[in-house]
Length: 415
Image (tube, rainbow, N blue to C red; front, side, top):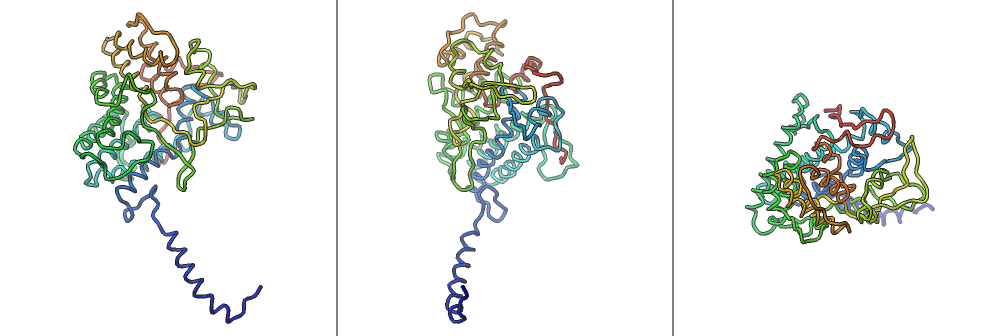
């Protein structure tokens, strides 16, 4: 239909107004990617927290496959059963580059938060910064990470020991800031931080992370001190803690790890050893794994086990839970020779799992016992590979085919 000239003249102002209003509605800052001009403390916090969820599926699949907790049987991308299980990891490929890039974007927000002049924001920023470096190092391990954030790639990548020292410094500096931040934050956090959304309660999360990194370095006295100031509660819910949360809201995302266990085809399958190594009656197995009627097969690998850890596309993924803290304390007790106290802690989680208490925990069995408890309590939370590295036991992880290996991620070639 053609419009007559006089009608065109009448509606042109209306079109102009609508166009102007439409442009105004679309011209707003993205809180997940604030610029120097649009950044506020709230947008930086929101962006950093959202950034922790970006590519979390790739990050966790990396850890779970290398740590032999799971397979990712994806015929459309054989790298998950090829280089991820045999090596070497392509330094230009997405398996290492995308988690690396996601974490360093978070760090940029955190650097701004640390310089904001807001003690609470600084404490949170330093804590998130440390957590991002922890995630990078969980992949690169002895290859280290970059500690200069100015884009100068002529600066050498820092060693693992230097990165660990930086993580400790950030967590301790953040804890100090949080303790001087007053009673409330000047910004809000997502529901993933319910119960940890004030400086005092967020500081307990900070100390949990500090305990995790101390245990990984066998610094058990520091770990015990940090745990004493964390949210550890041996009589509390094992699921209390901090989580990545997801939704269908605009600018948000879903849980990239979820697949219905009874779907016709699934990609994420549980390593068969998780069934064969489980104690009879362990509720952590039966509640987290379903046995499928069919067997998923690809690239000479197979599994009939599907994870049921997540029940929907928007279920949360743990950052840290009370159950981990209880077991970290057990590790620290073992490291200091206090086997009876370690046994008490391990029996807390065993009781919840429907298992009989341990007795006679001593130097000959304590390490095996705590590794078993952590394996089944923290299943698919990304800690298994770190634990086996810590105790020098990666050679015990199952290799299913000739040529398989336990790989370490390289520094991305762009660095």
